[in-house]
Length: 231
Image 1 (tube, rainbow, N blue to C red):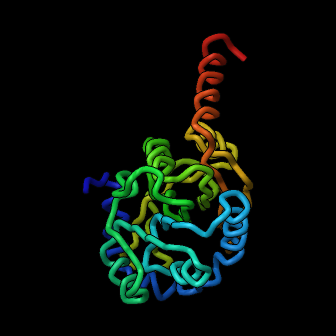
Image 2: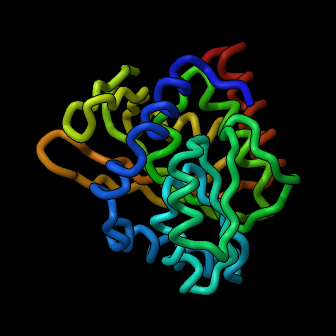
């Protein structure tokens, strides 16, 4: 698997400090409200529990929430260290080492996806390609949740608040900025929530659905016409 320099920095941090990371992020209920919304939308729009892809699953914290609710669960992450912990905590579940930019699944394999605090480690120049790749793995009308950090630009965070060697790459987004990206990549936006954590962090939560390919092509044609002839 090929990784960018920023991905290598982030992956190495999780490999080296995965145990410490796990100890400080044990709360299974942290995303429980988001899971309730996600599950309700999936049942409403897709009509069945289905197979869920957890993108950037880490040590598998959210695995039991899905499996106890009756979903078929698959977790992927690029950190071998975190995946070792995930398999110990959930020995009967499927976890795979994979790069989000090159997912090892067939097209239309999943009814839903869960990308909580994972796509924020992807460079902005690559995010559209990643989202299109995710879209290809989703079945018709599939539902997803993407959680990012609100802000501007990109940076390497030194991570001194939780690790002595905690450098990680982050891409920050504004709500309208990421909405436009999602729509360009063939996702309808079901809803958006803002969730504040501490004094500085604001999570942006995007609940999305894979839209019809025809609708996506119409949007592309309209965007091209606007660029050609003006608004």
